[in-house]
Length: 61
Image: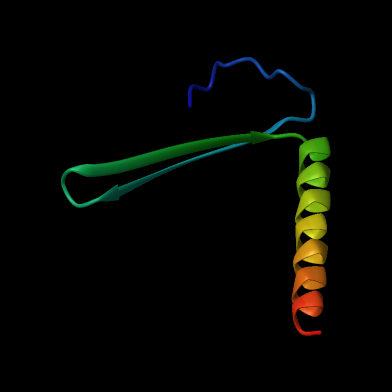
């Protein structure tokens, strides 16, 4: 990721990584997230876990 890209949100957090495996495989990844995005992802994760727990409990009856 280029250092000179403008930040679109004042609280935006960025991460970049690169992994090289052998001679021919080169993996690169970038991520951008805001604190509000992290909170929404956490709420979604909890909702999925609660739904899965309800399904497991219902299947045991």
